[in-house]
Amino acid sequence: MELETFTKHFVSIFEVTPESKFSKNTDFKALDEWDSLMALEAIILIDEEYEVELDGDDILNARTIEDLFKIVKNRTND
Image (tube, rainbow, N blue to C red; front, side):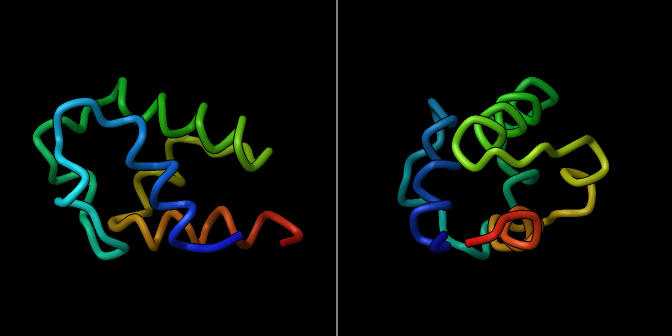
């Protein structure tokens, strides 16, 4: 699993925020579009794409896309 691919998957759940606003250091929870429904979408996306189950605490503990990537990476065999 690569950070660049993970970032592209993560960005795909956003409908309003331009892709140019995203990088591995993006504080995704600071984006106007981020809300509790987006958190659920992220959890579902990660479960479907990476077969990793996250919970609310995982989302709370991640600030950037890279933080979230590291959580997922640590739970996969890739």
